[in-house]
Length: 136
Image (cartoon, rainbow, N blue to C red; front, side, top):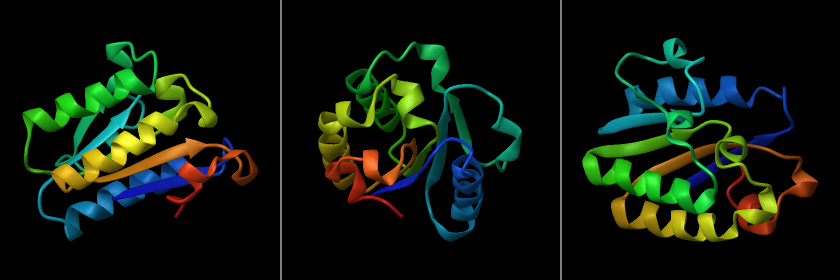
């Protein structure tokens, strides 16, 4: 399953995804991963959540980030949810440049029974339908 938290910069997406991450630990069985582009929110998460600073790995596009996610999943088959903050900034892309990523992410989520929750900084009117279908 894929869910997208959306809104313009400063609309509270990061607080919401952090709250959802911390709440997920009580509701889900399996490991929870939180991916961000820096370390600033590391201490806002429960200590049981695996925090990954993907900014240290030089992501240059959605395809590269997809490979990164495959690597994360290949190392831990117990992951139930992956939370990704600031997705567009992390992959250095615009919403209309991510269709390939979302189609492959859907397949990855189904194959490994993993829930992906992403925060995406974009206005509703800017989001393509292939992202809008995942809005929560």
